[in-house]
Every structure is written in C-alpha cells, then in structure tokens.
Length: 204
Image (cartoon, rainbow, N blue to C red; front, side, top):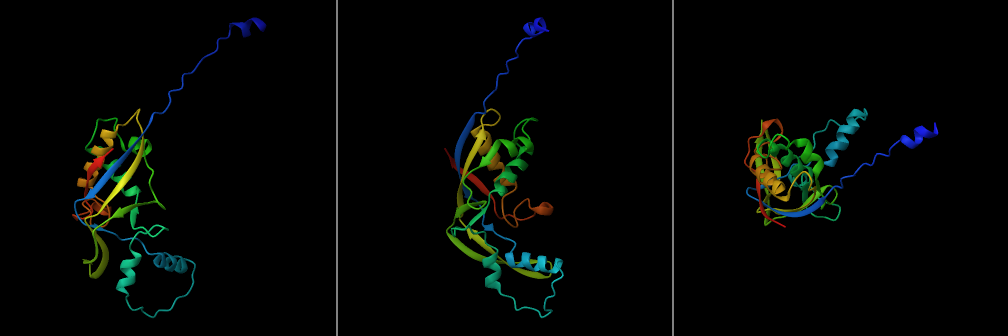
C-alpha cells in the first residue's frame, strides 16, 4: 500500500483567469423613444381579480395625464430611464448578423454585463418629452415619447471571448435592427415601427 502511494503522481491544473475589461459606450437615439411601462395600479387590479376581491363595475373616467405619467420608467432617485435588459437583448439578437458560428446569444448573455443600472434602469437624457397619440385596434393610446435622447452604457466583459470592438458593433446593429421601447423595428410579435432606434456615438 505504501509503494502504491509513492507511485501516485499529483496532477496540477492550470487555472486560466478571466480577463475582465471595461468600456463606456455613448448611445445616441436616431428616432424618438416611446415608453409603455406597465402601471403599478394595473398590476394591483390584476392581483385583486385573481384573489377574487370584488370591485365596483362603475366605469372610471379616463385620466390621460395619469396614464402617460405611469408609463414612464423612473428610478427611486427620480431619474427617467429604460430597462437595461433592452440593450442586452438587442445585442443578443444582433448575433444573427455579427461574428462567426461561435458568436452566439449564449456567449453575449454571459460575457457582457451592464453595470451602471439604477433600479434596473439606464438613465437617459433627452431634449423634449411629449405625448404620442396612436391607435391600437379600436382603442386610442397615449404614450410618453422622448426626442433627441441619449445615454451611456458602462459594460464589463470577458476579454478572453469578446472584444470592445465586438460590443460596439453589436450595439450598432441592435440599434438599427431592433431598437428599444414601443413601436420599435423589432418588437414583440415581430414589430413594425420605426421608433426607438439608436447608434453608438463614442466609446472608451
């Protein structure tokens, strides 16, 4: 038994460290951004209905100002922003147009982290906010819209598998093909609008 122990060899495993890089990307909107946040009151109404809590059948008077106010994404510190996953999802979809067969949605999902979120939102700057009136079937909808908008994305990434150039290219394609917000080129169900598009302005 002792001889067997002497013959055993130790196997050394070399651990390859993850090489982490950081980049700041300036995003500039190329068309107006439309928001359509699901209101908290609507969530409460759904939960109440599911819980079997009776409600009055009396129809409420429509409050357009409240509708548009509640549809805006706002951080706890009062900044207007947009969910960070919108840019991440756009980059994942853009892998269809960028890179080789190893450049996948799965890689982008794991190798890229957006780090400057506030309550899950990326703060945006804009020159003008207005209300867009549009029709969805027989219903008229009033949505908050933002003109000449921009933001910064602080991105941490795995340099072993993706480069800063890859990231800016993905974002450029995502901004052109997908966009963010309502009535973007590629929304749920396919999308058919021209709002929410963007491009990379600068990166460092």
